[in-house]
Length: 390
Image (tube, rainbow, N blue to C red; front, side, top):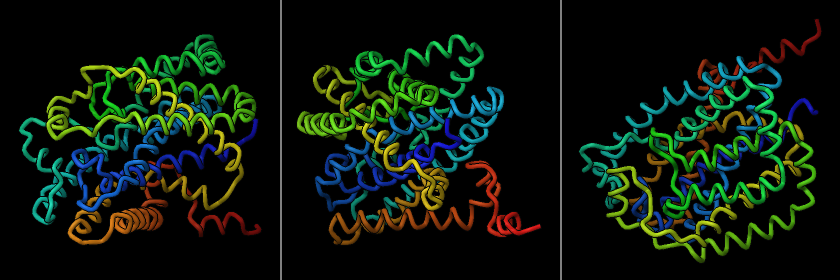
């Protein structure tokens, strides 16, 4: 088995950076007018499609990659090293960044209400909540990833059990039949599009979806020939993804009203009174087909070393952690201008990414924070010294 799966590094970075694209698009899509912190009065439906489409597969793909990396770490370094490493790289950043993010966002909301000519409905709603639910914001993925890593660590204490589980998860009948059924059952009572599991209390549907995809990723490491075998179905999967995404957009319900958002904010409740089984099944098929296409495309075209893509992959973790406050700082002032939505989206996205990469390179990459997020990196001077003849 190869020493490094370069496509895994690249896909992890792309999945995280797609999160920046997703959150930037939310401000300019009419569908999300009542649901986002920095929505703009200038909108275009194009950004609804962009946000909803990327939402279908970016985090499912991330958890497949996370499971793959977990299996690598356990195999190469041992179970004990794995849980220590994940506690440092996943749990500790969550504990550090969550309170900082919540504090900064609260201050930005206060500033936004005063500065913006048209304060977003969600901001006014949140400012009026007296007993808000604890919200993990965009850092929810760290909270669930740590839970899945802890369960994976426990399962690896019984090698026969974990080996049998990973054999079952990678079987075609499980991927094609059992996985869609379990995910659909878990999401049946949720609003569509499915929300992020923002609460601290674990949600069963997130385990049925992201937890199983994490295990699938771990299984793909141990049974990597499955990826090779799946390549022959790449074109049919692209067709299925296009058809299911098209059907999904056609069946999509109306955007939630401000009253529905208020109930969700106050109670954390995102369930629906009446289940639309067809819509739920189509959503599940769109999630799985888009995720499969993205994964196979990565294996097919990104599985070679490239120093620039590796750098982007390393930077993506930091950029994702800090991007929401930066986006708000850019999008709130832009909301007072008459620029078209596409121009505002381009400015806010490019500015956020530029600030993210600059801050990573000069303030994170070779620091204690960089070591926490990505491990030790040799500085250019250190690399030159190591490469020089002795």
